[in-house]
Length: 267
Image: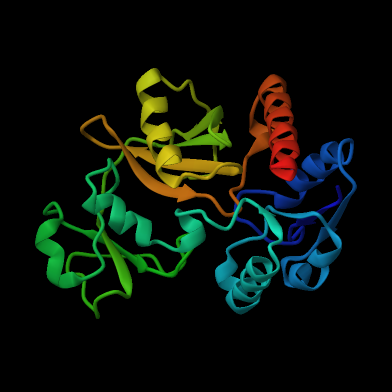
């Protein structure tokens, strides 16, 4: 069952080397699947010759939104298997989920998209404002007085958090966690020993997303109150920082991914 593995090996990610991660993963997946790599701009034109498309480290689709939308439309129309499946409710579908989760009472950084609703947020000296259709902190600003039309920007209280932590899953199985002890250095990550409460927090968002297969990363921050709050639910092409985990964790992840893909292809 041949796989088309979508990646941008030349993407200049800040503090990360996408190419090394995808070279590792494809070298191991080739032991189990016939596999070819392509740039995200070529995926729509090539996917008909493959049993499934695996979307990996391609950078924010914001940089090639029209081509990505065309790929999604073509894959859905043809019934092409895409991993992660295109039914994700997290970043794959935009940032609306932050508003939905806030409204549903989930432990997420409180989020609105209308300055007129500012009273719904905690009163703080400064608010984070970022484009609703943004990614990778593109367009992020901080201001004490958010302004602008409704529905364009996400508005959140600026939180003086202790650290950020990410939980990595394959399907619904937790693999490992990494955290950034210094909030100013987001991608200087170290292994994190997740507690039962931490995993319960992360799993609640995996369950909410309802993806049967796929790689997901739950990003959170430790608030001053001590609780974890969701920052992002990355279900499109989450970078995995595999070079920072132990050999056992790395091997476990690759095994889980291989088994997930075998299951995905036979459903």
